[in-house]
Length: 228
Image (cartoon, rainbow, N blue to C red; front, side):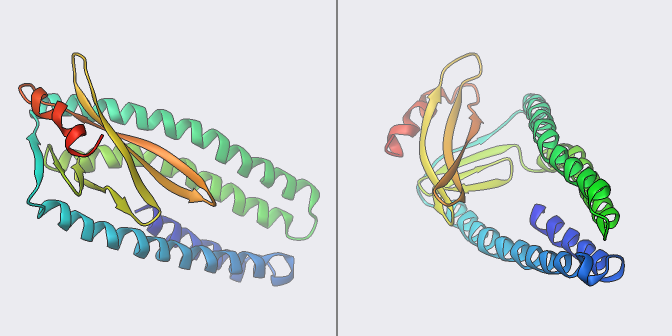
């Protein structure tokens, strides 16, 4: 969804550069940037989401299914609300950084660039406003989407499916670094992955899969079955 949002926003930028800002005052540069963003967004969607759909099929049809857990709706709803609050906190922190940069650049263009500065500043303020709206909407969107998905987890030798999302153990700009069992009142399996977000830049993330009561023994065996 984020890729298509960026693609749609790039069309908006292109129209601003075409109809509002004169070409030599930055309009042509803005149109060039928007075209680059449009095709980059579609390329990312094709390179990432198509392989993901194939990986999803591979996990579902894998004969070596290690676990298939269905969660109690009340318990699962509490997990979704906790993830929702964590998502809002992460978005708020990221929004401060990104919108802060947009606002600073907008003020700079409006105050110090005489030709096309006001128009460029307004475009940057529009981008900041869009990022604010997206940051506020996405946590609820993802919570509602997950609530409609089957409350289940599937773990196989090829990947993990949790909350309707698939996490293959290998993929394009993507990798799996291990899994461990977390003891406690609410035991869970911690699946560790990374995404390549730049040249030699690895962005790690963890998928926490709750373990239902009575499945603790099976869950403890899964790290060893996956070689960890």
